[in-house]
Image 1 (cartoon, rainbow, N blue to C red):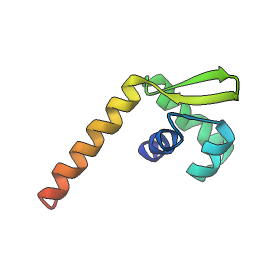
Image 2: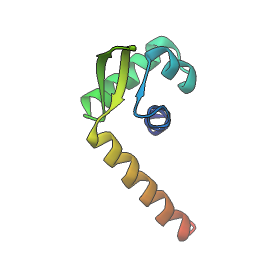
Image 3: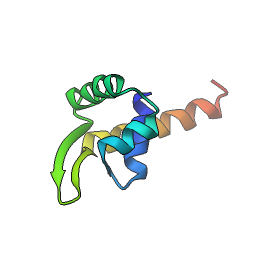
Image 4: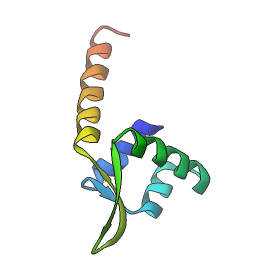
Length: 81
């Protein structure tokens, strides 16, 4: 689930409005808050106020995580794991 949320943010150019993430992740408001808190605590996502309004944004650590996750997934699939 957390990976899917990170990918949803990345797909929107690295920033996403909370409501859009709520719909993309198909979560309740309370569940979204819990998961976003985990991502924030892990340094993968940060909350920002922009001209477009409030958004969740990927951090450099979040981008690195997605890159490494993709490499791991490709590696495991190549061995049928």
